[in-house]
Amino acid sequence: MKYKAAIFDLDGTLLDSMDSWDSVGKIFLENQGVSSPHNLNKIIKEMSFNESANYFIDTFAIKLSVDQIIESINKIVENKYLYEIKLKPYVKEYLYNLKSKGIKMCVATELDKTLSQKALKRLGVLDCFEFIITSGEISVSKSKPDIFIKSMQKLGVSKEDVIVFEDSLHAIKTVKNEGFDLVSIYDESSKENSQKIKELSDYFISSFKEMEELF
Image (cartoon, rainbow, N blue to C red; front, side, top):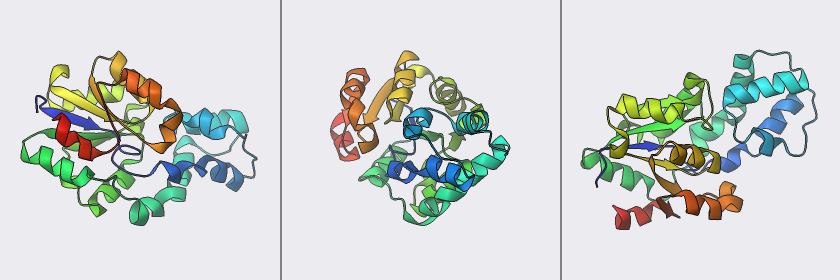
């Protein structure tokens, strides 16, 4: 493998988890006594947790702080990450293959760090990663490159020595605009954008099994 490091997204890339988020925003608003718009998922899909929380406050006059909203949302999905969500096929084998080759890896995710750590530990792959970095720490979503740049810096490598693994179009656009090499992983949640994702990607895979042929 020509790369020295890899940056992995979590939901939809390593974890088969995107359907767990389908109704979270709706449930949160209902818990606050508010009816959600029919296109809520589309509105918040590309937002970080902080951005989503501010959207709820500004749009629906939710009388909670940003941190309280994030905590409430995490509680809605907590049990799924602690007990139910699985790795995508061949992820574990691929991660340990990279680890055996001395490739440094990290997770760059929108998800809460504690939930990320607990899920990856339960699934037996937490020790593959140097660190987990979240959009909450960076304070911007993946529509901006900050989280990828910070990840690269913490891994101690240059841009040509790192490859990014992502599944969602807005993050993929950011990665390529910033000049990173990219592997895009198919996920049902991004099905409608598959053609555009393929066009932007250096590599497009349906399963990590295909990585054996690429690297």
